[in-house]
Length: 322
Image 1 (tube, helix red, strand yellow):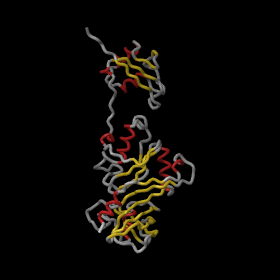
Image 2 (tube, one colour):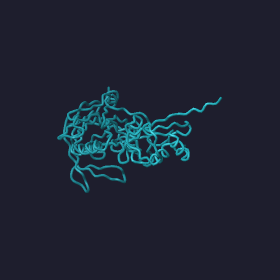
Image 3 (spheres, one colour):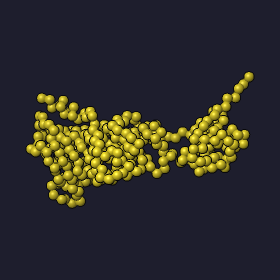
Image 4 (cartoon, helix red, strand yellow):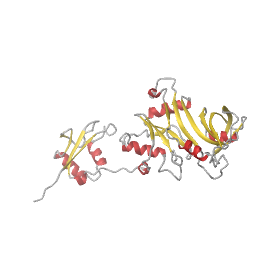
């Protein structure tokens, strides 16, 4: 005796899938189901909407329940292939809510794809994470993908802000621009400072071809003003551990500004003494939210987020223990 095993598959129609004909939705979702069989099974009431008989030209609505009593071999859903699924699962999350993520990025990881390296980046890891949590699906979101509100150089570690929705990204971009999100860094530098704290002002010119910036004491060419505050936390063996607050946020600002005043960052192969080494001792370790108005993220106002275990501090103490 032979038995035919019939499976029931149930799908809930999403907002993004509503408004289209049932037969078209089924064909896109189950490409292995022949159209002739689909029409036959609709007539036989083996394909139903909300447990009721339906028709191929029915326009599906959000929250409709589609039920298919068919053999399993034709109910294999279309498999989507996304580049972000090839990214690493590693994601050190400091804080998360319905609007954003705060991530502790390790040195060596890119924030965004570049021409020769686009698979494993911070943004692709974030997208993989949210996709696996069913908080975001490219098929459902035609106009927005999770995005980063700030960036760090590949070999700079620290806090990255990722927005989960378009309104959160708009607020974050606005507040970073208006300096209502304060960013603090730790750096290990060469030399001992004459002043334990200071506010530095200079002018920065970017050379796109060299991917490098130049700092001057006076306005120079197509320059942008930069302001960098610092406080020396500790000095050992002609090295210093410094806390930095970025008042302006320009490309390579900290690295170039401190090299300009004679205190380049340790292991900075671009602006420092260690030519060819690009593991600059720089860590974006703290964020403060100081909003001046009501917005989507007002619940974060007054809060400070800090990386608890900052490897830069440990390295500084270990390497300058004598």
